[in-house]
Image 1 (cartoon, rainbow, N blue to C red):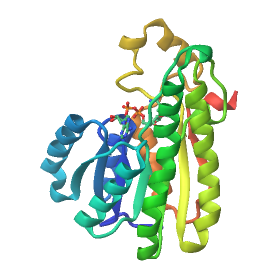
Image 2 (image 1 turned 120 degrees about the vertical axis):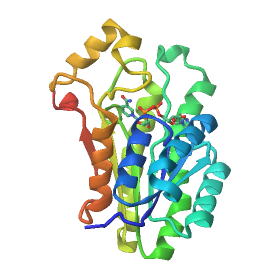
Image 3 (image 1 turned 90 degrees about the vertical axis):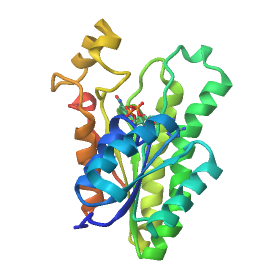
Image 4 (image 1 turned 135 degrees about the vertical axis):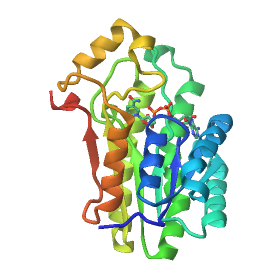
Length: 248
Ligand SMILES: NC(=O)c1ccc[n+]([C@@H]2O[C@H](COP(=O)([O-])OP(=O)(O)OC[C@H]3O[C@@H](n4cnc5c(N)ncnc54)[C@H](O)[C@@H]3O)[C@@H](O)[C@H]2O)c1
């Protein structure tokens, strides 16, 4: 079992939702956490708030997960600040929902860039740092839509299916280097965009798709990431945390 005390973790998309809950869960376990996010203002606000409790264990870095140079810079800044890197959570993600024949090339490519290429870039630059330390953990945020389909979510579903396959391929490639690679596939999670107020009747329809009778909470996904960071015998898997959505 890994003890997360003094481990250095990057969480992309760490300024809100699942990423923020994961950053907090890792901090609670004694890790040093880089909150990496495209949202400069949100990231700085979160950094300021968390410093109140966790002091210098928190560091915000602006990143565009869909841009290779930016991800390279994020890893470099992390190592400059904390001197090593043990864990990366490639969590930043975006989606568009519209009829597939109306999706522009630009929209499609941006979803793939952030959700899929971002996982490649994160792993590409984190893994060499982990190898310097004798090992590490790569964690990725997938989705139930990485394994089941959903109308009007073509690019998103494609990107998350790719995340599941990247996870398996990297796990096999780096197991011998003591680097484990896993993903969490959440069902629908309460968030700024997914809630009763913003979605109205559509929200009730979403709840019905989860046999457990509610949507998930970001902390329930963070809990799975902590498990995957700590448990040394798990690699190459995507853990469904979906209230039974995909069991149907
Ligand atoms: N909320 C859900 O129902 C749900 C379900 C399954 C999977 N997910 C996945 O969980 C992850 C987190 O989503 P969330 O629900 O917490 O959403 P969220 O919108 O609350 O958080 C996403 C964060 O990513 C940041 N971000 C967006 N683009 C970025 C980029 N290019 N570079 C860096 N940061 C960027 C945003 O600023 C935001 O802080 C995503 O990968 C998403 O696909 C969410």
